[in-house]
Length: 235
Image: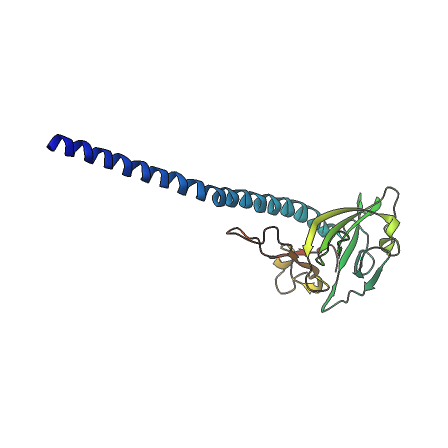
């Protein structure tokens, strides 16, 4: 009798073990989809963030070249703040010697070799995205076309520029996201002059990055991407 009971308990235990195993397999399959999706989502966010950071920083930081090599660099000549939707459709925003002003784009020039070379120029501007149905915008980097000019008039001529999109989908944010603040103690070497630091304009960009993933644990919110550049070649 005891042998029969022993066999009976072994069969029950086997059935229970198989049921538990089946439940574990089912649970693993249920969890696989969201976990794998989260890992993929995280990779997408990471890749986008990396690409944006590299392109954004590389080109925007070129802003620090403004006025380099120019014999007498000047505001509103060697750095120009604009508002509008791109070259040919911009209005110039006058840069004062004190205080702060805002705009949508900033254009600048530099000369290499110093004072004797040919001027080169570039610019960045937040413009509406033609392919967006959600009001998103693009941060565009402008490079002059071969043989282009770098005068204030040419900087607002559409045919003077080739365009490279930095952030293809910048979330629609506040108007005039570029601020230029005059007379700032922003240069490390100039700030070391005791009692009389050298002051320069500072260009600040504060952009809203568009959402890539709107749901799930790794949802990417429309975070701000602020950056400030000291225009140390300009008074």
